[in-house]
Image 1: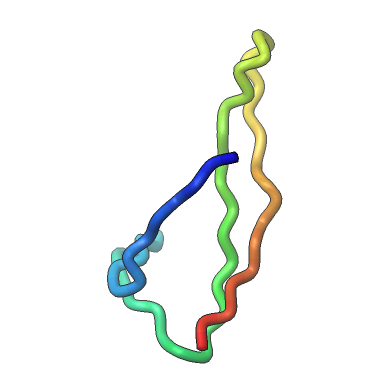
Image 2: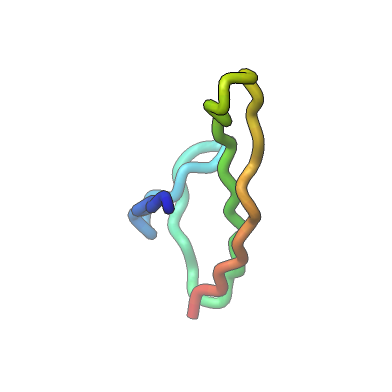
Length: 52
């Protein structure tokens, strides 16, 4: 199982860093290489996080 730690006052986005605000819902998904010997890549299941 992988783990990722983010600073909630500096979330990276395609347009730069921004802060998370209460009431927002964010969706996260990661891309990874599948090292099974075939050279494939894949995506993780997405997660939804509601910030209160």
